Image (cartoon, rainbow, N blue to C red):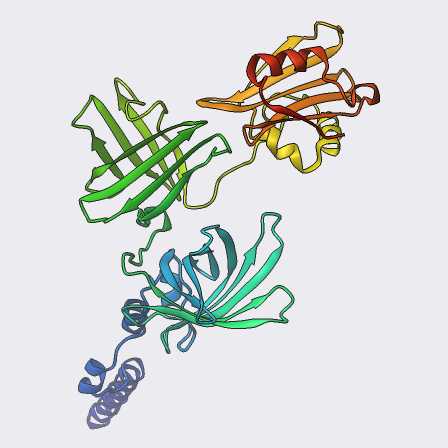
Length: 416
């Protein structure tokens, strides 16, 4: 009986030792104070996200310690500064993951240049290494920005070097956040940089509109909208009231039942009119889609419905040379009529609305091999051009009739 009891005590002691060992291996002894003070991997990732201004995803939280988390939502920077301490530029830069996209323009020229490249954030030092290629309209690289963004700084800067396409020339640049801008998580909700000069997309040598926005506040903006149509012009200026979301603004005239509505559409500004008379400030109509760049297109004689083919247009250019621009600036409104003398000769005359003495007339045959043309220069001379040798020194009947009715006192200059 004593032996059995002894065996039982020994067995109980063994079991107690085994249970204690297992418990010790699953829960190692730790210093409670050390555990409380040391941040977890989750906390470290979150802190880095706050410092750099970049969101942290679940995938980033699982990355090994020491690796730089990638940016999973767009962070947009509105920047301005100098290249080589003398060339002023403004840049919009969006960083999402390892992709960097945006655009910039030289303040002097206001012509947008597309940017595309890569970003490599390092949360430990609070910097983002960025490489941006500037691209022309055909997608060819014309230059490169290489630098870093100090993402921990409340007012981040982007600094580095700009180089040309082949790397033979390099200049330093330093850009800082624009005073009127802020960093936003979503490029599509980024505030539009309202202030500045905007131009209507379909501006040309006859019709154009320019919008200048100044003195921007959270609730209002001051503007001047100039419009030109030939020799006619109009202007609207005043203060528009901005919407709460900052994406629209409205101007109401106190002189007439007339409103202008400004609406943000990405990088464009759409201006529409509402009321009885959209042109009461002048004999022009206001409104359209505007961008912050030079949008003027010089219309040629095909665009102006004088010629129907590039071949005929090219032949006429060869005849009149540099004076081609005299014709394209004198034929805003054109009309055609059959030739009195010959059936297969086109006769097209044109002028500019609201401007007397700015006129031209062109005659040509079906295949564009023969031309007769006249245009007013300096409101004093009738320049005459032809490639028909027999008519070098005389005006054909339709052009002579046009001259006598409109410019009989002007001298004729035979240009051939």
